[in-house]
Length: 131
Length: 474
Image (cartoon, rainbow over all chains, first blue to last red; front, side, top):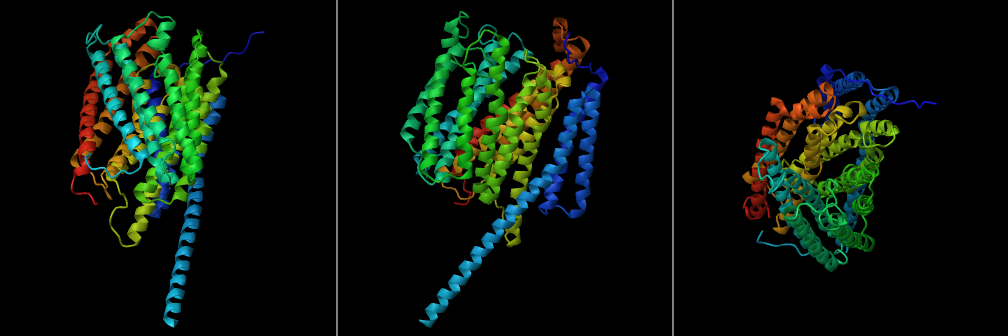
C-alpha cells in the first residue's frame, strides 16, 4: 500500500509579491482594527470612527483570503485562516469586556473606600467637637 | 551615575547585570557590523576573523546580553514586588561573577581558538556548533549552575515575601526558561533529532517564555511608570500568559517543516502560527489602553501633566509593543505557512524577521529597564528625555527598521531567483546572491547597521549622563 503524501502546490512566480504584501497587510489592517476599536472605547477617538475599525477588519479578512488562495492552502489551513480571522474580530471585544469589568470593580472599590474614609473623618471631627 | 540612591542590594546587583548586558550589546552590534561588511567585501578580515566566527559572536552575544538584562530585571523588581530584600543575595553576587568570567572565557576562545579537531574536545572546550547556543559543554554546565542559583533567589524571595501576580508569573516562567535550556544540551549524531531538541530551546524560549517575561516586565513598568491599576494590569498579564503559551508552544511546528519530522507538523505549525500574532495584538492594546485610561483620568481631574514618570523608559516600552507587533507579528506572518516557507526558509527573509523581532520584542523593553534603573539610582522622581535619548531612540529604531527592509528586499530576490526560478539548486544559490537587488540590499543593511551602532554609542552616553541633567523633577 502506498502511503498518501502531502504535496505542496507550486506558487506562481508573479504571485509572490501579492502574497507577501497581503500577509503583511493582514496584521497592519488587524492593528488598525484593534487600535481604532481600543481608542474609541477608551474615548480617545469619537464614536463615529468605530465603523472604520470594522472596515479595517474586513480588509484583514480579504487579505487572509487572498493570501490563502494564492498560496494554494489545503482545506485544513483554509479553516485555520477562517478561525484566525474570526478570533481577531472577537478578541478585542472579549478583552475589552473583561477590562471594563475589572476597571468598574476597581473604581467602585476605590470610591467606596474614599466614601468610607470621608465618613470616618466626619465622625471623628464630630466626636472631637462634641468632646 | 555618580549619585547612588539605591539601598537595596538586589537593585545594586541588577545594575551590575545591566552594565554587563550593555557591554555585550555593544559587542553584538560590533561583530554584526563585521559580518555585514563581509557580505559587501568578502575578503575583509579573511582568515583573521572569518564570517563564521563574527556571526557566532554576533548571535551568541545577542542571546547572552538579553539573558543578563532579564536576570537583572528580575533582581530589580523583586524588592518592589515582594516588599523584602532578595533572599540569598550573596549567592546571587557570587554567581554573577562566575557567569561574567565564563562568558569572557567563551568569547576569547571563539575569537582566538576559533575551531577545534571536530571531536569531543571541540564540544567540551571550544563550541557545540548549534546556532545561538554555541557555548562549549563546560560553559553549558556552568550556565545551568548559575541559573539554578538565580532560580533559588527568585523562589526563596517569592515564598518569603508578598507574592504578587507578576512574581508568580515570573516564578513559573523562569523555571520553564531554565528547564528548557536542558533540552539543548544533549548530544546525538542524528541531525533531525538534534534539530528537534535544539528548537525546543530556541523557539520555546523566544516565542513562549521570553514573551511571557516581557509581558511581566511590561506589567511592572505600567504600574510603576504610569500608575496603572495593579489588578487590571495583572488580569491582562494572565490573559497574555494564556494566549502566549496557548499559541506559542505548538507554534514550534513552523520550525519542523523541513528538518525531517513527520508531515503532520505542517498542519500543527500552520494552525498555531496563524494564532501566534493574536497575543501580540493583545499586548499592543494593553499598553495603549492603560496609557489612555491613566492619562484620561489625570486630565479629568484638571491636571494636564503627563502621567508618565520616566519618559525615555516609557518610550522604549511603547516601542516594544509596536516593535513586537511589527517584527514578531508582521514579519513572522510573512512566511509562517509551509506553502510559502518552502521558498523563504534560510533566505534573508528569515534574517529580516530575526533582526526586527529580537530587537522589537526584547531589546526595546530591556533598554527601558536600563532607564528605570538610572532613574532610581539617581533619585529622580520624574525623568524627562534629553536630546541624546531622543537621538539614540530614533537612530537605533530607525537603523534596525532600515536593516530589516534591506534584508527583506534581499530575501525577496533570493525567493524569486534562487528558489522559485532555479529550484533551490547550487547555481540558483549563487545567481540569487549575484543580483543587483541583493547586493544593494546588503549595502543598505551595512549603512543602517552603522546608523544603529552610532545610536548605541549615543544611548550609552545618555545612560551615563542623563542622571545628572537638571531638567528632571527630583
